[in-house]
Image (tube, rainbow, N blue to C red):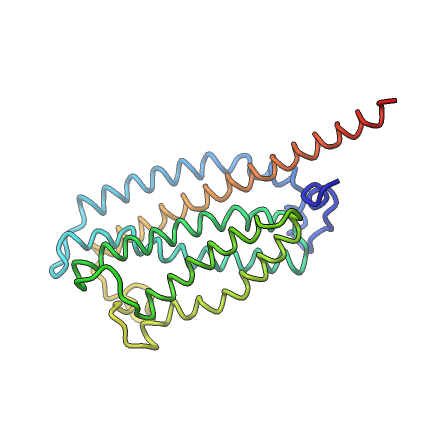
Length: 262
């Protein structure tokens, strides 16, 4: 039996309520009714939010129409950081409790997180060119987000770099936890250092400095992208579980045929 089959077939029970999800079959049954509503909600929310952001939200008095890039850039930035925090939580579950589905979810999460971070960097460059006069500056915020992108890519590559799937998952989990130190740097870099990037205008202790005509469609876009992010990761995790179950069944059938052969 290979490592991937052993991980799903003989995984130790996780503590507390996580034990309910430790069984791959139970996970598939529980999430079978989630994926379609989640996908539909993401499509409807994104469609409405896009129309609101592109056609109903007013242009900024300083930035003009280029402010609409924010409706993609800011949600991507939040998802890049929030997704990486989720990756770190999955890594803790993997290293401490040996939760098999945590390994699969982390494996499917990292490519999506890398894509989201790449979109954050690309839209940031598009927004920065008319605002700053350059596509890129090596200030603290941009550099730390670039490091976050490399961490996502590193995890995605590392978990796939070993023939022993379990070993790859352990190495990826360690990298993910080491990379957590970059998250506060991303978040507080505009406060700790003098950067071109504007400070936080939504997630502040005081009232947001952004006008509600911009703030509300921004939040709607964030919810829509967040639902889409969750739907893609859930679909990938379900597919990975089913793939490994099929592989386990094929190996079991091959062993039975081998044993029956005189």
